[in-house]
Image (cartoon, rainbow, N blue to C red; front, side, top):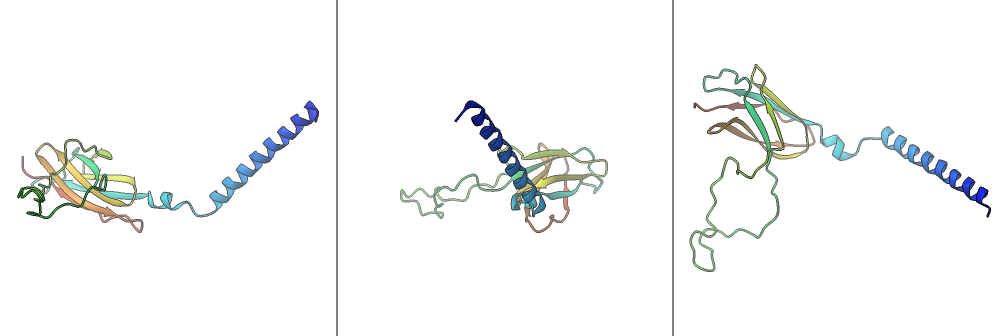
Length: 158
């Protein structure tokens, strides 16, 4: 084949490839969006109030995932230790959050104490409002069916 013919074949293949890619894009755009994109549009919203039930303006609100980070060994029941250690298998204290936990998202409440997290994928989450020892926490399960009901968090007294 001549050099000119090779250039023409290469150009033809390039045009054909671009047309194919564009036709696939139109097919995806015309059909239903992928399931991950359908489910990722959920919103967690709610209100934070102080101890007197007044809206907590500018309160910090964080969203944490409660999905297990990994599957570990099956936990032992209290007293089932092969070594006889009675503390092995004892239930651990449930911490509000570990210092190593990083929130998935953070926001602040508006003047009416309202907040929202948009585009949340299905799964279990913890919503924590406030700072330091003045915090409120609530767990919420997001499903792919509908947005969860609005949450209400009440900050304890300082």
